[in-house]
Image (cartoon, rainbow, N blue to C red):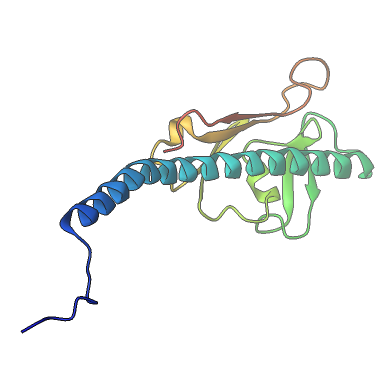
Length: 159
């Protein structure tokens, strides 16, 4: 009996070649995907850094136009939606380390640690918060070095 030869399939060699090619692609794609997560965390840190700088400038502008101006060693301003009662503590017209987070609209998925003149923000999804954070340091004087807040981004290990 003669069988119809129109039925054809893949040979074992062809199947092995396809599996090897898929394995090579997977070996390069998985590390690239992990790097995308790190890049995303770094981008989020840059966004938080910009938000902190903008919030600080906004608070200072509001402090300047307050009557009397709140640009001394201490002061407060009221910002609707900031914190529980809208009051933001100031040092030299800028938010203090403990009050800057109240100026941000949303810190969901971020850890925040505020001690004295500094506040540290890090993504909670990052395994190493010591090397993946943004540090806000409040103004410490009205003139010269330290007269404006500093915002430093550390994204050396956002895995």
